[in-house]
Amino acid sequence: MGIVLWFAVLASAGWLLWLWLSRARRVAVAGREAQRHIESDRDRPGALPSASIEVASAATIEPIVERAPCVGCGGAVHVDQHEVEEHGGQRLRRVDALCGSCSRKTTTWFRVRVSLPN
Image 1 (cartoon, rainbow, N blue to C red):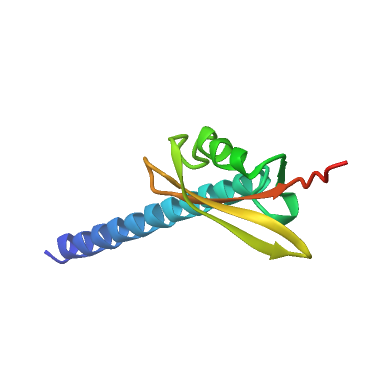
Image 2: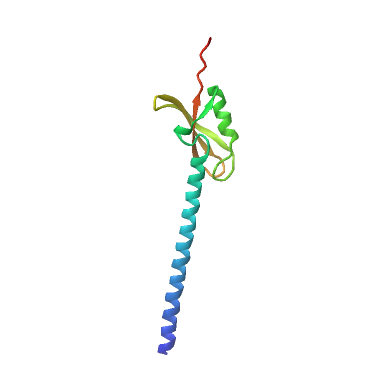
């Protein structure tokens, strides 16, 4: 009878250890995937104010943003906010877009090229 009890205790402990290790592995994989998404998001044009996209007119900004797919799922995005901010003495346009599929929010920075008349 004692051997059966010890076997049941060891089997339960082994099962709990297996559950804990499999969860730790899933969390590690999810963390690596999230880090990859963050790095790929930073590499895209306009992701940071220092890498803003230069455009000729403010009217072209929203169509550019809505034409690009969501960086998370590839779905369609729509402009949520479009504001002007000062960064390093430059006026930049910050456009916040929201994905219709996964609800991911992305920010893209633009710089409007100023053309002075002759």
